[in-house]
Every structure is written in C-alpha cells, then in structure tokens.
Image (tube, rainbow, N blue to C red; front, side, top):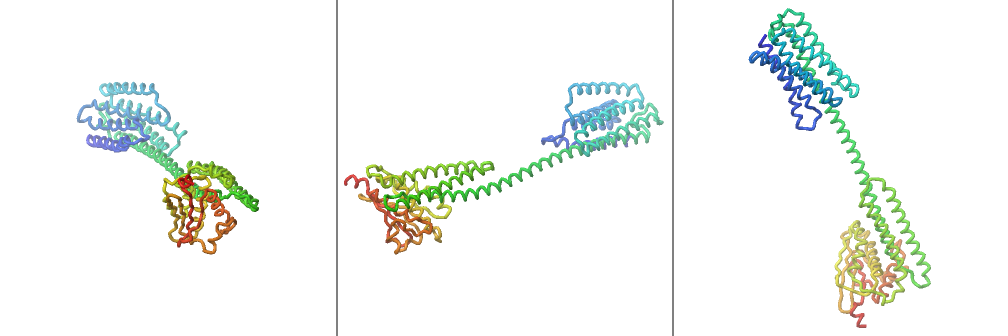
Length: 495
C-alpha cells in the first residue's frame, strides 16, 4: 500500500501542477486570474508532495501536508469571495491565525492522538471551509450566473459529501488507532481517493470558470470591434458621399466664379438699359447660388465632415460675395477712370491672380496652364479691370477647349520692347472662324449658345481706356490667340 499511496499522491500533485501552468503563464498578460488562485494551486500541490515524501523523510511532513491542504482550502475561500467583493484585512488576519492554530493542534494530535482523531480534525476544518465556499459561490451566482459557477457549487457539495463519508468509514472501520495514512485499509483508501478526486474536479471547474469569463470578455471585445468597424464603414460611406458633394460643389463654385468675373459694365449708350438688366440678372443668379451653397453647408454641418472642407467652402462664399462687390465697383469705374487715376501694375501679378481663379477648373478638365510672363513688367492701369480682361480671355479659352480631344492647353506669355508690352493668351482649340473674326468684338456678338456677347466688347473697351488695345492674332494657325498691348511707362512719360 505504501507504493500505491506515494504514487497516487505524486500523481495528484503533478495533475495540480499541470493545472498551474496556465495560471502562471497568465502572469505575462493582463488577465482576470488572481494570486489567490495561484496560491491555492501551490498549497494543494505542496500538500500532496509532502504526503508523498513523508515515508522517506519524517512523519512531521504529515503536519506540513495537512496544513498545506487547509491553507489551500482557505485560499480558495478568499478566491471565491474576491470574485464577489474585496477581502478585508481582518479576515486575512483571522485566517492566518487559524492556520497557525491548526498547525500546532494537528502536530499535537499527530504525536499524542490517534489516526482517527487526525482524520476527523482535518476533515472537519475542510468541511467548514467548503461550507464557506458554497456560501460565497451561491451569492456569486445570484449576481453573475454562469455554467462553471454552478458546476463549482456541485463539486463543492461533492467534496463535502466525500469528507463526511471518509470520516464515517475511518471512525467506524476496523483500522487500528496507531496506524497512519499509508497503512489504512482499502475502504479508507478509497474514500481518500474520492476526497482527492473531488478536489481536482473543483480545480478543473475553476479553470473552466476563468475560461468562461475570458471568452465572455473576448466576445464583448469582438462585439465592440464589430460595432466600431460598422461605424467606420458608415463614416467611410459618408465621407465618399461628402467627397462627391464636395466635387459637385467645387464645380458649381468654379462656374459661379466664372460667371461673376465675366460680368461687364454697362456703357452710356442707347443699349445701357438692356445691359444693366442682364448684369442684375447675372448677379441675382450668383447670389442665389451663394444662398444654396450656404444652405447646403448648413444641412451637412451635423454630419461627420472634414473641418477643412467646411472652412474652404465658407471662404468660397465670402470670396464670392467680395467678388460681386468688386465687380460692381469695376462696372462703375470702367468708363469713369481717368488715366491719371491709374497706378503702376505688375503684369505678372494680374496674370497670376486670374490664373489662381481658374486653375482648379483646368485641373478638373485636364487643361494644362502654361504661364511664362516676365515678373519685371510694369504698366499703368487698374489691376481689377485688367484681371477682368485676362479672366474673360481665360474663360473663353476654357470654353473653346471643353469638347476638344487630344492635348489641351492654355499658354500665357509676354514680350516687350522700349515702347510697348504685349501679353499673349492662346489655346489649342479649334480657333475662331474667319467669318466671325471681324465681328467678335462687337456688342452682343457671341458664338456661345448661352453667351451675352458682352465679354470681348467690354474687354476691348477696358484696353482702350488703358491707352492700349486688344486684338485677335489673325496669323495664328492653331487655336485662338489674343494679344493685349500696353504702352510702357517710359513711353508714357516721354509723351
């Protein structure tokens, strides 16, 4: 029986150590396992190891073994209570005190008592501990019901029954009082196996409980990730819709800018009433577009959107309103400015300002803008009016290239000599028919279906007011080429 007992104790100790692997590997991660669980595993494995070593060392190891078993039961009680609430310092102090009292009481019983008394002592204290376990587990189930929690209650009751059966057979059996745990009969040995098996089942159920909680946490985390993923997908869809709306709005704003900057001023002639009516109509259309854009931005302000997108479009609206105001001022000044009111104007600055207004639309329409203007060229004039002329010529060039296939470009270059400065604006379009070349600068003459026939007429009037000229290069063999001619400041001073 000695060899069987030693082997059984060692077998159960190794089984418990096997259960301990996951608990101690779990230290490397942020887990829900506590040191009470690890401590109970160490104590129970140490108890079985002490039992196995007793025949080869000293019977004092029986006291160490039973004390370790009792310590494991107390630690399990702490574990079950910790699942539900905090462990008080007073309870820890009482438990440690009970552990020392049990150690000395069992050692006294080992020396002066009988085998049956030692069995009754250890089974009694373990029964009290298991009753405590059952109490804590039942209270836990009321708050956090789980399958393995219920299984732990069942195994705890099983352990309690095994303890009482062992007490019954040891005290009522035929074993002499002077024997020890290694000399008990087969029935007593079987009850001890039942007690040890119930302990192992309890520890396996605890492992299962932790796995159940871990799976619940993982499931909750996966649900959170799924919800976040769905939100991200929804946001991506909204961003795509916002991008499409942004592109559409950009085209509308660009078209609106083109219309606003192509407004001409009325002249003192018999047709001034008709022209003024047209200008008012165009401005009203632009103001309506501004209002629609503002209402659009107001409609999307509650949706997740790019802050830069909102600021950019609001700036567009402000810029458009300012542009309308400037156009009205320019309309009033076109035929009232005296040459003496003009200032030095940098031609490159006039071109760059106009190019900035159309470059986005050119990118969208795949039109290359080629600018090669001398940055040192200075003429006398009004920058706003000259920008209107350049912008009108650029808008006409873009309209001519809209349905053009192949490589499309608009080229702006400058030349100069002592007497004059020339600004060339040409495109790679179909050009202007010869029959129309003589009349394109006349008022209300247009080749566009939706044109007013005012832009080129007004542009030439502005250039005449600047003591310059606007003409169409008749020698251009491809596309259309307009030439803005200015007198240099030196030539004006000399005259």
